[in-house]
Length: 319
Image (cartoon, rainbow, N blue to C red; front, side, top):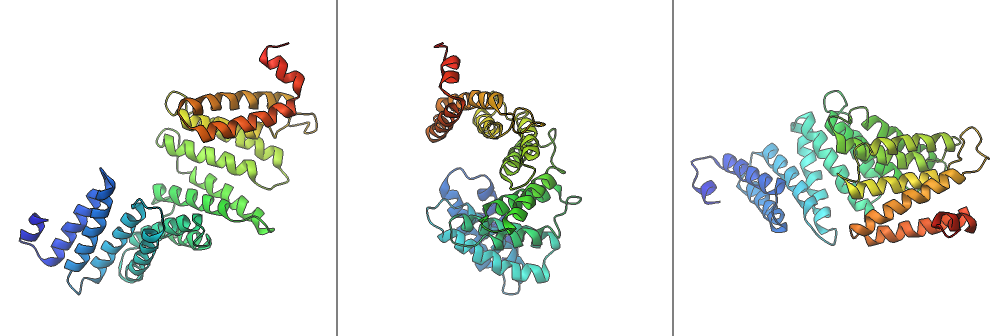
C-alpha cells in the first residue's frame, strides 16, 4: 500500500496497481482473510480511479465480483453483492469492453446465479441464459477451455431443473449433449482430470436420462465410467475412484446381463455391483468419508436383498 501511495504514477495507474495486487491475493490466498483483503483492495482501486475511467472501473468491479464469489460464508450476502456488482460491470463492458471481457463476465454471472439457485434463492434459468450468452464468444475453436467449462456448467444447470413435465426429458437430453460437447475439446492426455470428471458426469446423466433407450444409455454410461477410471485410479485419486465405481455399480444394478435379452435377468450385474460397492465403502471408510460409506452400505443392503438369502450365504463363505 505504501509503495502504491508513494509511486510516481497517475491515479488510474495506481488503481490498476491495486487491482493487480488484489488479483494476486485472490488467486493464491493463504487464508480466508486474504479474500476479504482482495475485496477491500478492489473497492479502494475503484475509489482511486479518475471519474472518467468508466471502463477501468467496470473491469475492477467485475474482478471484485469474482472475489466476492470466493468469500467463505454461511449466507448469501456476498453472493448477492457479487451478482449486483457484475451486473453493473456488464452494463459498461457490453458497451465499451471487448467481446472476451463480456463473455467472461457472463460466465461468472452464470456461476453466481447457479450457486444462488442451489441455495433456492433464484431460479436456474438466469444462469443458463448467462452461459448461453457467453457461448456466443467462447466457442470451441477459439476458446476451448472456456467452452468446456461452460458446457459442463450448462449440463449441471439443466440437470438441476425440476423434471415434472414433458420438457424435462428435453433438458435431460440437452445435459447429455452439453457433456458430450465439452468432451470434444477435452482429452485424456492433455486434460486428464477434467476428462475424468466430464466422463463421470456424462455417465451419471446417461444413467438417469428419461428415454426409451434405457438399456443402450446404461451401457453408454458404463463406457463413460470406464473412461473416467483411466484417470481416477485407487492409487492417485482414491475418493474420486470410489465415487466413480459406486456410480458404475448403481448403473450395473439396473442393467440386464445380456443387452440383447433385457428380460433375461441381471444376477451377474447385481453381483458385480455389490462387489464394486463393497470396494467403494472400504475406500470411503478408510478416508473418513462416513456419510458416503453409510450411503453405500444402504445400497449394498438393497442389492443383497434383491440377490436373495442363498446368494448372500454363498458369497460370505457360510455355505
